[in-house]
Amino acid sequence: METAVLTKTEILKVESPNTGVMLTSAQAALDDVRALVIADDQTYQFASMELEAIKGRQTRLENQRKAITRPLDEAKNRIMAMFRPPCEMLELAERSLKQSLLTYRSERERIASQLRQAAEDAVRRERERLAREAAEVEARARKKADEERCAAEAARAAGDAARAARLETKAAQTEAAGAERADALTLQSQLVTAPAVAAEPVKVAGQSMRVKWKARVSNKSALIAFVSKQPQFENLLEVNESALNRLAASLEGKIAIDGCQCYTEAILGSRTAA
Image (cartoon, rainbow, N blue to C red; front, side, top):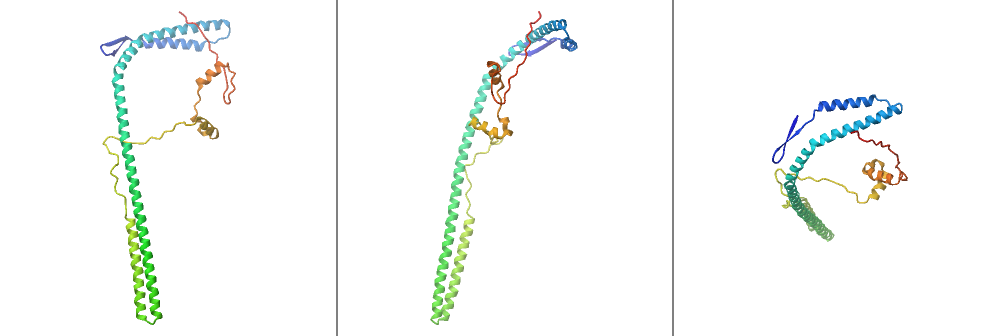
């Protein structure tokens, strides 16, 4: 059976093996191995010969597979090499443009934040000014009203009841007017708002902006100490088993590391039958 693969200049044709025959042969070998019981030296010797035969079959299958896949891989590599330069250029262009857009948005957001802060500060200062003015107006009105009441008392003491009454009425009016003016200033301060900020980032159809939180290790020793006290976070510490195995092999298992245990694995070598 033939398989066709389109390359840059031609159609590559490869011969496909009969998968049914391969599976039947491999299944038969697997069934024989499962049925084999090594009970003595003779069966051990027979099993060793079978191992060599199986390795020989594996080698032949691997060679047959490579004979098919090597041209495919080479064709794929040629295609990948053909597309790689323009793809890398476009990826670089995308990253550069995204970075420029993000830089622009960040600058606009920084300016907008400064303008918002300045507007909020202006609102705060104006409200504080109006509050001070309201307090001063009310204080002046109370002071004047007190003076008028004192004058009314003096007029009453002098026997001028009519003048005393007029001054009492005037004092009440002065105090009421001061309170009314103070209330108006207080209401005015509550109505003071910040103007709209004009430097907000632009909105573009089809473009979205989101923030993605990340974390990095800034102090590995501190992280290890933290995990030792909070074992529920032990998944943050990944064990480098390759480095651990190299250390065990170089020291022939003579390592003393808390939480680590050396062990051996038996590896059986066998030649391949021709």
